[in-house]
Image (cartoon, rainbow, N blue to C red; front, side, top):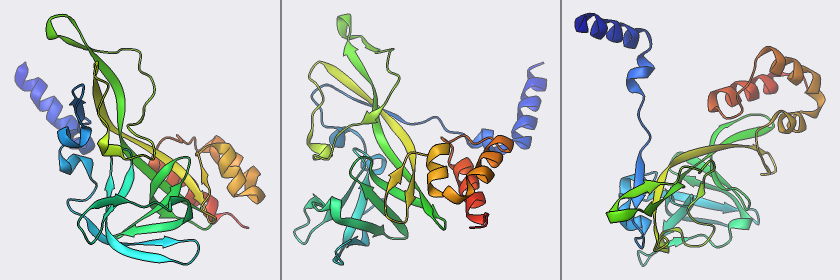
Length: 239
């Protein structure tokens, strides 16, 4: 019986190989009073294994070259100066884009940095991935910890202040994991949360065609592949 079950499971994996590749999201626990950047390993805090040459371009025509890296704690792009100090760009509101290696990022004061996934005629699809604090573990009796069960939302660990210099609340452990959000970014660098309404706003002359497409091809606005498919269709519509 056990042999039959194993064979059946292997047959399912053969038909659906993505099941074998599925990974449980990493979860990190940071004890009360600890710094997240001291507890979470470097390879899990940063997008790149080392700081990569890149360029920051500003809307006033200025540009600056440095070695950059994307920090998942807080979702910041940091750079190394000539003194080997790790710093953050101050003039974020004036940023046009940052290129790090082969990747490109845009900035919005409300949503922060987003990596450009793909670019179409009237919009780009941006992706923002952060190490989000998804729960708080409060100390139980005799040193036993339990996870708060009512957490239904997530947020980045920090705001625009230094992300890695904050300790957690002295009375609670923090539970962190990766969370990803997507944004539509128009050619004027304005960010939109993906919805049917924001798609219509980007393609005002094609509202009827878009409504027909959404009815015939349901779109999960939280899935990257669905958004790419939708934007590709909108770009193919007659202008």
